[in-house]
Length: 433
Figure 1 (cartoon, one colour):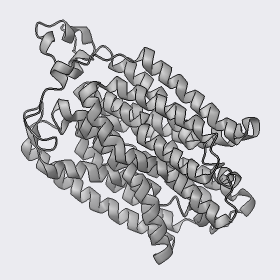
Figure 2 (figure 1 turned 135 degrees about the horizontal axis):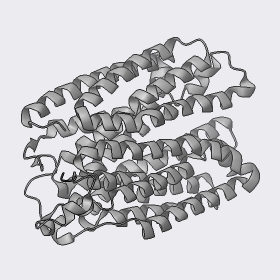
Figure 3 (figure 1 turned 120 degrees about the vertical axis):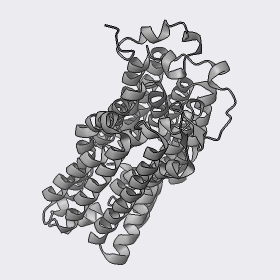
Figure 4 (figure 1 turned 45 degrees about the vertical axis):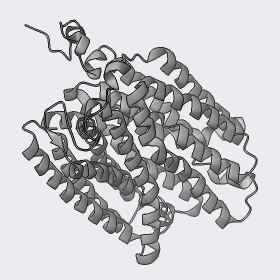
């Protein structure tokens, strides 16, 4: 029996047409190895970026900010600056990945973040802290670059699973980071913790430099495109229109918007549930980490499900399920009920990013995939910036429970948009995404 091409990559490379194979076919021998390194790199870089959460207000105060309100304000600005920077430059790095290869973008991100993370440890005032956090987002983005590499190298029928595994590594980094940030400062000091984070990312840079393999041929992989990146003929032979791409990007933004909408108010909301002030921050940290824990449990499985039944079906189902889990959070009477519901919410959200990533990969011509995935990352980080702003404003205007209702309504509206895009996509192509 002839082996399946995915189980025997060399079979693809040894064919008479090997010289004209696509980028994904030429990297069939390397995608699993690169996936493992990208998972490790995404984990370590996000641990380093998120570990400052427990002590960020303390560092802001240490840098000379005195009043409590100013400490809170500057902490929020410093934390969001990285995501804002990534949202701005992700399309640029994706475009450069299409022109010069995916591996150089990984190396650039790791080296840049290692340097900037170490410099944060020697900041002299809060302005330098915010500027360095912004620069970390502008020149960093290892997880974004990993999405581009994995999304373009994984075989078409394994892309959902591969992106789910990659998402699990990133989510685990966001989950473990705050825990590491609570342990290291007493041992190394706050500034020493930043140096440790920089060293951790430097290890990732070395592993990427010597471990990642890529067969990138500028002569073939950067030929001029005859169609735009949003209205083009894909390898499947169908055209993807602007409306479908817009639905993909809006859905990507909604994933993190929904997850982050409660972040500005979660500590206050938990305080209203009767948690003692002495344990408030600890309990809030557990609740914040609950959604990431849920996502780790299901990301790979739902990604594989998208490979079997189609990405749009998984997206619509997960959006509706997330909306249903969002509403009961407004009626909880104990913190553990909120934490449990956040775990369930993380489990339903987890299916979205791998399925969306797979759709984005095949929405455009292969030579434009990096740019498209860059726009996807930009949309996701935009949701991470916009979510806390919207959640905070809604809470002030209409009360804390209204945040859950409004987010659920947005998710339902997004599911209707996604279902419409699914119908349009089904009319255009005989094969599922």
